[in-house]
Length: 295
Image (cartoon, rainbow, N blue to C red; front, side):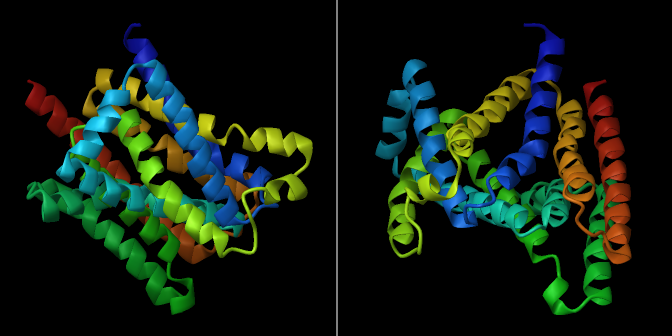
């Protein structure tokens, strides 16, 4: 495959992630917990099959045998599971716009996380977008009461950023890592599910036959963008990938505003505008630094 296929793969991956709200909203008869649990189980089985046929089972065994990798991936499993559950809850509760806000915040949060935990230096030209992001959050807090602080957006961006941080510290393939992460969460999810008012078979009584079939693809649609992203990330430079990543929160924003018709207050619109300015600054700055370093 040539470079254009890498662009296509990355665009397809982030587009699928951006359109996921439509998929989960279609199954909203189920609770957020049920949807999350089914996504976890189906992802594990789908990824397990892929890993098996790619001959990567030994990689999973090696993770179990290596205490440091095992511990770190257990932590990352908690982060990604929390992110998935919170994301599905946001969609089911009609807060897709806030979910998109969280993923718009993510690149800037990544800079701060990298500085705090990995001692990565923050360039002077990176501080303006960081300050703008904090201004956008303070703008929402100042103009609304504490019940309307964007907790979902903040927690989504933090859990995903911490997930990325942990995965950066572990040298494992993306699919092998996610297969391990989903496997370690199965038992805790089953235990929690036991105390829920629903069961793993509730969907048979709640969903139509057509929707049950759609639900069975949850593992596939979780795995597909991951595979596409892994392919594109290996072949595209950082600045290109960084620009394409905004497709996902942008499409979430479009879904929330134009498909699900969620209300967008003036305060939230102001916050979005400030964040968009911050992201434009961040993207241009990253592109300039990348080109300068390349030269």
